[in-house]
Length: 118
Image 1: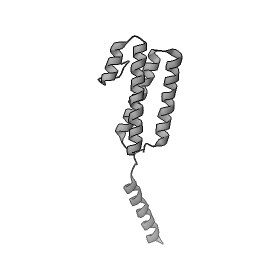
Image 2: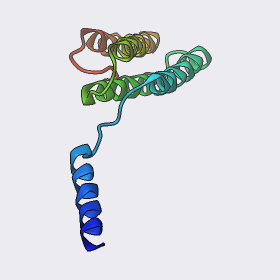
Image 3: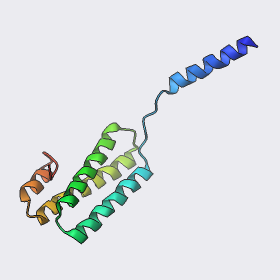
Image 4: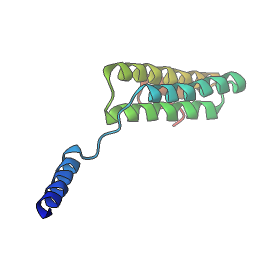
């Protein structure tokens, strides 16, 4: 009986060590979540026009999408969707800056040197 308990404990430990801490995997639900937040940005932009808060929200979302992509753990399809979404969000930030007559911030954001509004 003692050997079975020891063996079960050792096996459980070995399984725990081999699985390790799994990296969170990006999936369609993440794409949908980011897309819903982007829809809020578009709605705010239509309601408020070129407001600094719209621009800042777009920059922050683009940075979170890029950060999620940098962490890895996504299929090629999900990566493609997220890169497209990050591009759309970055353009929205630039257009919000243009609407606010802040062309320098818009140019910086589109040149990808630094996010607009920063």
